[in-house]
Image: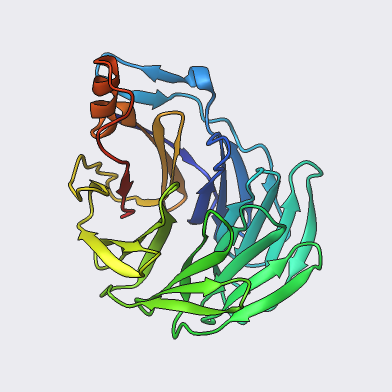
Length: 315
């Protein structure tokens, strides 16, 4: 159900990567070589089914072009929702924004006092958030060309940032083992989640329900109800559904770090890196419960799947 394609992405170590959420066909990588590289991840007819039910991306195009301008290693990268803008945060704390259609830098933003290690674009407005080893979370207005708010509260670096799907809140996860929920309109902390025993490595939201998932170095994924702010479940490092919380499948990515994932057109795309190389992973989730159960039910005349979707923790 899974196969990997690997390629050398940078001349020095890869530090970060991000998949384009809109198409799942583009990938941006940041390296210790100060470069930000863009990649096309195959094409629809390049995903082939073999006799072993494996799916192979058999074409990873060379980098479209690299985005130069930073003078230190790249520690974070992100696409905007339209895949037109790319942001990259550097070890110097500087953030640069590129317009891919114009192929040029449109903003150079300073304000962090240390490495910028996390980035996320607002789902609607012309804003993005950045997190740094300086413990601060900053909100930037692309039009005003500057920082419009700084959230202070973490005691160590801010590893992960994610805006809520409705754009009202932003969530940050830190090396201090805490997850903080911030209200963008009020400009204040709404809630502090403190159940993890290791630094926070990833954050994501259920696309349709008011639920938050947080992944930690303590090798657990925790699920939170954002209406009550209560912990509703905790898991180990496998693939789980929400209700009930139950393991469905596992995927071993070897020694590489699984850094980003996206579900698109019935497939789970994951990208990992190890030293200067990047790996692309594809899982056909229609063959895995609970999706396979739903397909069977629909073929028998039922209109809706019997179970809800799952979350895979990065390792």
